Amino acid sequence: MRLALIALLSFLTSFESNTVSFDFGTMQDGTSWRAINDGVMGGLSRGLLSVTDSSLVFSGQLSFANNGGFTSFRAPFGTYDLSKASQVRIRYRSEGTTFALMLEPTDVFYFPHYRLPLPGTDGAWREVSLPVSDIRQYRLNSERPGEIESEELRKLIRIGFISSDKNTDPFTFEIDFLTFQ
Image 1 (cartoon, rainbow, N blue to C red):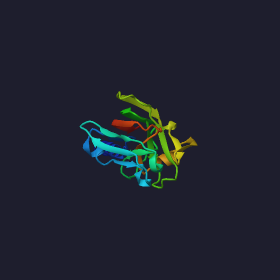
Image 2: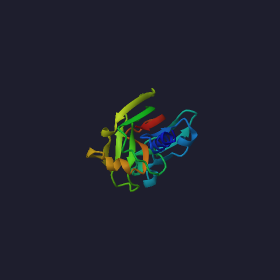
Image 3: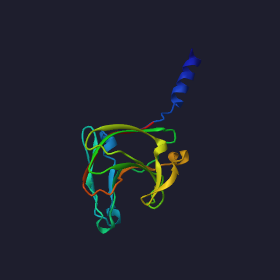
Image 4: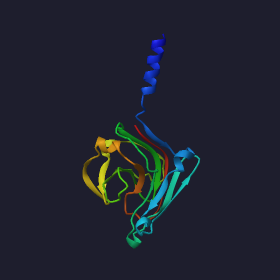
């Protein structure tokens, strides 16, 4: 009996979750994310984050003035191993512009990063499950050929969302949860 219990405990402690998840209805998941706009390069786009009881809300307006053209919000730098994920599940709503999920393997802006475009929702809540294989490489806002490799998914340092079209209308992007499984 004792050996069976030890074997069971060993199995349970070695079990790893294959899920990376953010529940924006909890304060600890929402308040650590930050808006990053083109002002870091002289642009004039605006994007502000706010936390509600059940979501994270990003609102603002894209501007091309002064060589601008992007607005985003991102998780803190860390280690995000998504190599075992096959799906991205997200519940969100958007209005005014479309967004893309962004995955960063480096903090150097001109090195490649990865994006997964999200369909617009015209303000209605939408839950989607998208294959990780749909994630594409971008460099300096231009799509590059090929899928994201498992090795790249293993060494990500930041996850975020970025405006993905050139619409200068005011926007709102609200997210309930994001799960990689």
